[in-house]
Image (tube, rainbow, N blue to C red):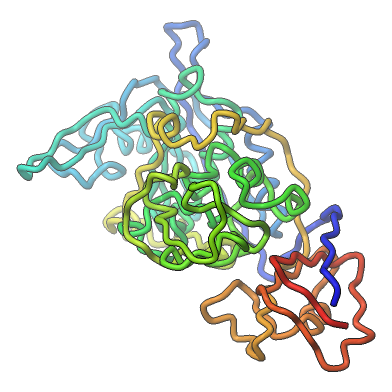
Amino acid sequence: MKNLIIVILLAGLATTSSADTFRIEIDYMVDTSLGNAHSHMPTQAEIDAVVQMFACQGHTLIIDVDDQITHYDVLQLDPNDRDNFFGFSGTNDSFKAIKDANFDNGDGWHYAIFGHQYEWRRQETDGSWTYFDSGSSGLGERGGDDFVVTLGTFSGQTGTPFDKASTLAHEFGHNLGLSHCGVSDCSDIGPNMPNLGSVMSYNYQLEGVRSGLLCNQLIPESADWLFKELDYSGGRLCPLDETNLDETVGTLFRAVDWDCDGSLSTSTSQDLSTDGPTWCSNAGNLETIADFNEWGSIQSNAAMSPDLLRTQRFPLEPCITSEEVNALRRKAECAQPTLSTESCVSGRTYWVKGSGSSSGTGSCNRAVDTVARGLAVSTPNSALILEPRTYSESGATGLVIDEDIVIYSAKSTIIR
């Protein structure tokens, strides 16, 4: 009986079989009364980081940083229609009035404003609605063609370079059909899934995917090469059944004390996603929360009929506020990464079930039934994650683990 060994290696360029071209026009607010000192204009480095994020998946992202526009402290919501933000043009400081005056591109383009704040609403217990300055990092149409990045209550009242790049990717992700919780019901799950390795999760939008996973001790340092700071999920993390969590195997990459009681149990229950990274105090519904291959589902509707885009109501996705960031940060030492144009992650992650089934139902993305099968289908720089069990494979005496394939073992052994 032999314990499996974790190997560390560097990742190369990722490819995809289906390449698309996406286009965004960005107009940005500048407060000229302050001598242009207060500008929401994204820098070239911030744009390049997001363009590279898409290039790593084989996609082309064209971003036109276009017009400097008048600075308004708050973009207005339609006072007569609480669900109409992007279609309201009744005041100069409304999204559509600004878009109508400044949008220079046509069909197939998404339109974004980098601004300060936007007006939002909440329903009170008596059924009435209260309107307020949101403090939110942004707002996007899920499946539509419009979004805003509004970091006026964040660092320097414009956000850090990482804030701006990651929030651009996050809000554009809503336009591409992505939510905060994969394919789960966000009203049950909440926007903070720890096992959705994506800037779409509140856990990782402003902390970085790789840095957030490492700091919250969900992966070991030996697995950090599987994740980038700016990325949508590729489905690399395994599901977590909140009603029956085995802390000794945790995420299958490493053990995790999910209920924060100082010991590791083979069966415990804990809400991990409803309230945020501070899951120790969560008390919401217990669900099975599953990672999701977001890159495999993105789709732009910007080339739809202009009349349809104007009249169709897309779901609105308000996003994390500066207050939520401060309240939900699990550990004070979780430092935001420095923005960079990152190298790509290549290879695939396979879940080895060892149960004779490779359907993948109820388990990780791309399930295989044996270690040998996993090695056979893996490309260089792939990883195999073994379901905890002892593997005794017929004819496996000559099984060779290639140095380009990493095997992560959570209390697993293999007999060869």
